[in-house]
Amino acid sequence: MGFLVGFSPWILYWVLVGNASFRVAVLVALALSATAVLVQRARRQPWHSLEAGTVVVFGLLAILAFTVSDHFLERWLQPIGNAGIFLIALSGIVIGRPFVREYATASVDSDTARSDGFRVITLAMTWMWAAVFAAMTVVSLIPPIMQGQATIHDGASGLSIVCYWVIPFTLLGLAGTASSIFPPWFDKKSTAMDARQATQAPGPTVQQTDSAADTIDPELLLRAPTTSRHDEPFTVEIAGPAADRVDLTLSGTDLYGRTWRWSHASAPHKVGDEAIWGMHCEEPADRSDLFIPPAEPWQVRVEATAAGHRTTITCRREALAPGAIVTDVDVDGRPGLLATPATQSHGTVVCFGGSEGGVDSQRAMISTLASRGWTALAYSWLDEPPDTAPIAEIPLERFSTAIHWSARRAGRPVEAIGISRGAEGLAAAMTLEATLPVRSLVLLSPSSVSWQAVGQDGEIPDTSSWSWAKRPYPYADLPAGALMPQLIRNAWRLSRDMAHHQASDLSLRPAYSAGLDREIPRDAYLAAERIDCPILCVTGSDDALWPSARMATALLERRSHAEDRHIQFEGAGHLLRPGLYPSSPQVTGGIALGGRPAEHAAACLHLADHIIDFLSR
Figure 1 (cartoon, rainbow, N blue to C red):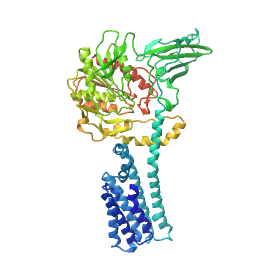
Figure 2 (tube, rainbow, N blue to C red):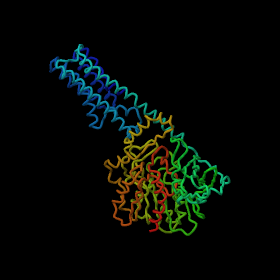
Figure 3 (cartoon, rainbow, N blue to C red):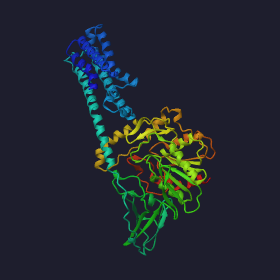
Figure 4 (cartoon, rainbow, N blue to C red):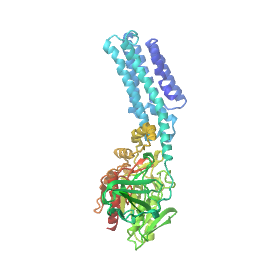
C-alpha cells in the first residue's frame, strides 16, 4: 500500500493532464502529494524519498504552470514531469534511500531489511524504475523535437500518441508488473531450493561389500595393497596371460551408502592414484556431494575383466595405522576426539575444523597425525548441531581452552592446526593471548580478517562471528548481495535443473572477495604480527568458497618471521584434507568448494607430508 500511496499523485496527474487543464492537473497532484506526506507524519511514519520528492517536483511544476504559456506546457509538460520523477528516483539512490527499499522495508523483518541481499535487490529494482523513468523522459521528448508543434493533446498525430502515451505507460506497466511479480517469485523459488537441498541429505549407512566374494583367475592377476591408509598412495597392477585389453573397475560406497565408481577400458598394466581420485558418484548430479569415507575401513572393490576372464579383490583403506587409537574426551566441558600413536609421540597437535562444526570432520586429520607419530586432539569450537548452529559471537576463549588443556596434558607447548573458519578463530585467539603455549601454527585455507556472523540464511546483521571477554570482536562486513546474480540464476533454472537432476551449486567467493574490496575496520584485520611462532599457510588456487590464497598472503605480509611458509597448490580447492579420496564433486550442501579433481587430489595426498615436515622443524 505504501508503494501505491507514493505513486498515487503521479497516477492522478497522468490521468488529469490529458483530460483537464494543466494547472488543475498539477495543483490537484500537488495537493494530494502534500496531504500524503502530512498524513504520514501525523501517523509518526517515516518520510519516503519518493513522497518528499513528489511534493518538490509538483511544487516546481505548479510554479511553471502559472508562469509560462499553455502552448509551451502542451509541448513540454509531459517530458518535464517524466524528468522530475526520474530525478526523484535518481536522487534517492544517490543519498542512499532508494524508494523501493523504503517501501519494501515495511513488509520484511528487521534482520532481512538490514541484510546485504535485501539491499542489493531493492537497489536493483530502484535502478530499474529509474531506467524506466529515464526512457519515458527521452521518448516523450521525441514529438516536440521531431515535429516542432506536437502536443500531448494532438490526437491526430501517431507520433504524439505513441511517444507521449503508449510507450511511456507501457514501460510503466511493465515495471509495475516486474515489481509485483519478482519478490514472491524469488521467495517461492528460494524456499523450493532450500527444501530440495534438505531432502537430499541421507543418513549414514553400513557398507555392503563382501570380501568373501573375491574371485581369482590365474590368467588375470591383480596386485593392489590389501590394506593401506587414506593418506598413502594406491596402485593397481595387472598381470597374467590375459592382461592385455583389460577393463578395470574400482567401486565402493561412502558414509551415506552412495556408490562411487571408476572404470577404464583397455587399462594399462599399472594404474596409479587416478583410480581413486577419479571415482565418480553414481547418484544424479543433484544428489552427489562431497565424498566422506565410512566410519569403518573403506572397502574398495577392484574388478578386472578380459576375454572371458574375471578377477575381483577387495582392498581396505583405513584411517589409522595399526596400534593408533581414537577416543572421546571431555575438554573442559566441550567434546573432543583424541588420537594417540602406537609409539612414543613426537608431540601434540590441536586441530580446529571449519564451519561444518563438531569433531567428526577432523577424524581424517587427527588419524593421519597419529599414524605418523603425533598425538592429536580434534576440538569442537562450534555449538551443536553443526548443520544449524550459526557462527555468531563464538567465544575465542574456546580456542585458548583447548590449547591450554592439551599443553597441560602433554607437559609442553603444542602445535595447532586450523581449517577455514576454524583457522580464522584460531589466529584471532592467538593475537589476543600472547602466552598461548603454541610452538607452530598451520592454517589451511585461512582468512586474514575476522568476518561478520553467518547463519543458515546468510550473514547476520550487526553481529560478529567472534567474541572476546564477552564483548563482540571487530569484524569485516560480508556483502552477501554479491551472490544475488548466482541466486537469481539458480532460481530461474530451478525447474529445469530439477527435471534434469542438475545441481544448483553456489560459490561464496564473490561475497568474501567483495568484502575484502570494501573498507574494513582496522581492528578487523587479524594482527598476525602478534603471533610469536612460525606459521604455515596452505591454500588452493581454485578455492570457490573464499579467496584463501589472497588472504594467506595478506596475513603473512604483516609478519617478518623467517620460518613462515605459504604453500599454494595450483588447481586445488577449499577443503584441504590429508588423504586420497574421490575428488569430484567438491561440493557440500549445495556450496561449491572448488578444485580440479586431479590437482586437488594431488594436493590432499601430499598435504600430510608438508604439515609433518613443518611441525617437525
